[in-house]
Image (cartoon, rainbow, N blue to C red; front, side):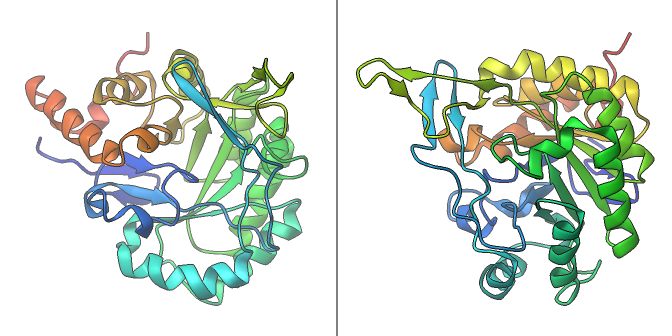
Length: 308
């Protein structure tokens, strides 16, 4: 390939393979198992202003061709996060790789967390702030924001007024108006829209006659959901003019190629890493091989190339 870099708004990343928030921890935890310097970016585990204990266990169960997870944004709160985790994050990664993911219950909650980070870092320290409106495991804020185009638009606008650091709007696609929500993120001036395609599901332990997940319902992850992730990426690509970062069931380089052909500029690798911690780099190697074999000079040539 002549160039592996991808441009996402005014951002430039070394390549289009990203580690998805919640699946790469704080980045440095997986560096003993894979070379994180080679991937395009990693979204850190979502942090909120106040500590959260997360959802009632059990929080994880296997399903055919995937898994269900219901963590509930468990985190130590922004003050402890910045004091204990942030120095290790900075030591393990380049600034252009670091995407800080922020969650909250309402706009003020998000802004308080952004303010704490602005006391510690600038646009020279991180690539972007990911505004998490995607988590379907919480009752307030988080994924509930993804139900409303206006809510996501106002949230992104508020954060952008607060900081010069580039902003990425992260949404789930569990609501019928997901294309309108993506348009709201675009209208607010985000650099990109990040799609999380994890439909809700329920499994029952027939021996205990109880749901396998403590929160009863939970999002489904893994290869089983990949076709619907491709479809939703396809539709959002048609709806907005900003770059799309897409995730949901990407386990192979071929999956990544397909998602990019549907419209993704970059791809988020999530649950695949629970099986193979080196998944990101193996997918990147396969992506480059595909492009070399098909005389593709830049990853931009893949994005949306299957659209008709």
